[in-house]
Image (cartoon, rainbow, N blue to C red):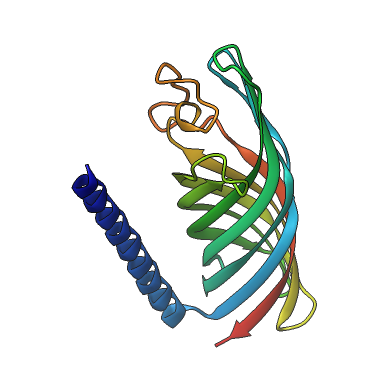
Length: 219
């Protein structure tokens, strides 16, 4: 058993290393082709999300969101963007299949990469929509449950307005969606009979808004 766990750990480490190297390679390629680079620290709020579980309901608690984005504008209508966001909340679950109600502090982390379609209205302002893929991690600071890692998809839309050549404001709405049989594998799952969201469907959808400062470096 120990040998098996060691092998799985090595494979997991190798996958993380490969993902990191691939991401760095993509960023270098886009940086070389980019017209400008944008550094965007942000904060905002993510709302509660309630969804059914086996014989009950669960809620992923909302809270203030922090993070940052790194964008590479390829042309006037396209930019490549990476994102990291963090949000803390209190999550709960009730089910007749578990003896005690669940209430625990939860941290939601997202690390995503994708593209935005830009709709410029002037040299200062542009609307945008975008999609990203990457990883979602639910962690539990109280240590009462194991961390959960999932493939994730993110959708966003908003507007950017530059008050100068190098500094701007950005407001957007976000949808974050961990993808898998989420209801079967979250910490409150009462057993193997719980299978929610098979075949790639996400039963957890986190919706929120963020506001940001944009620092643009022209090439």
